[in-house]
Length: 507
Ligand SMILES: C[S@@+](CC[C@H](N)C(=O)[O-])C[C@H]1O[C@@H](n2cnc3c(N)ncnc32)[C@H](O)[C@@H]1O
Image (cartoon, rainbow, N blue to C red):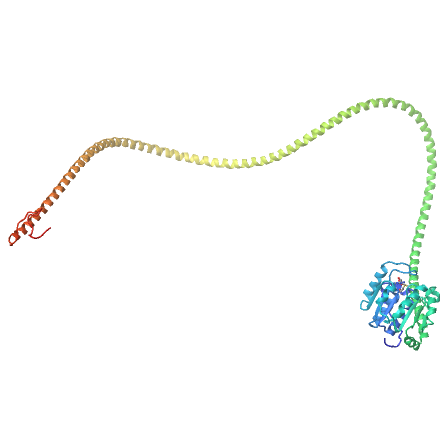
């Protein structure tokens, strides 16, 4: 903590954006003091016991945010209510979280949703610079809360207690009377009273005294009254404007109603006149009705006699009705038959329609065939013309043919003659062939003879050759022999083929 001058600010409490009723809450009259106190003390840690909608807590948060302090802000509450607030639902805690998220997200805030006694272990002893006790306001509760949490307060720390004013009617007032004489303290009387206690040293108390404490108390009370008056004035002005608008709308409505009333009165007068005229007419009608009643009596008599006639007629009608019923049955049966016929007719009509479609298709085909026939007829005519022309040609050809036939006949006669000649020739050829065959056979015989003679000749030639050879050998041997005979020591000897052979040679 550091000592600084006390400044009186004019803050904007941003939580009011999300819940404007915060500005008229029981605690709202102390928000300016709470805001300036935080900026003056510059606490490292603040704890609030009893946070509910957060009117006081978010005033402290606003100061921390605007002064850019690093204060840790701890809110302890079950957020379920107590004997004085009454029980409430989760929507309060949800709102509280939303305000933290949307307006004070950058601050170091801890929300301990639990009983005050359960939260004690979450906060170190002697670490709290400002402790705000605003839980249940009966004497036992507030004295217990103070007793249980005063050790958490740091040296020179401050304790704030709400609802200490005599007018509050709570047990907090009694507790405040007890405790305020034990420690340096002062209290604001407005907004159900806020007690400011200095149980761990009077440093801040002295500082405040030096800053004209009594004036400050009065100033904050006036400021609260002024703000409340401003709010009430704004409310009253808004209400007055709304009332004025409302009155203007109502004047306009009254005028509309007056106009409507005048129109209605005119209508009523017109109706009254119409009623008088109608009454007159009704009287006239009554007279007419009386006369008609007399007529009716006469008519009744006539009716009675007619009734008898009618009864007779009714019997006739009943008999006729029976006949009609019989007829109706017949008609019903005939209706059935007619319905069957209608169905048959419908079926036939369908068939006829289908046939019509077929006939239409066939008509198309016939037309197509007619067209084809016409085309063929044209072709046939063209062919007929061609045939006529060809007939002329054929006649010419026939003539040529006849001439040729004549030539052919002549040729045939010639050929017949030639055939005779050929037959003669054939006979001759046959004869010649026979002769030739005879000749061939003869030639073959001759050739056989020639070959036999040739064989004999060859054999004879061989014999002759052999004899010639033998002769040549004999000649040679003869020459040799003649030579040997002329030489000494040589003798004649006959051996084999050779008659002469040299002596002493063996073969
Ligand atoms: C008067 S309101 C607090 C108002 C708050 N300071 C404000 O300015 O909006 C009291 C709150 O204390 C809570 N409370 C009371 N006794 C409590 C306890 N023993 N433990 C936790 N919360 C408690 C209640 O739930 C209630 O929300």
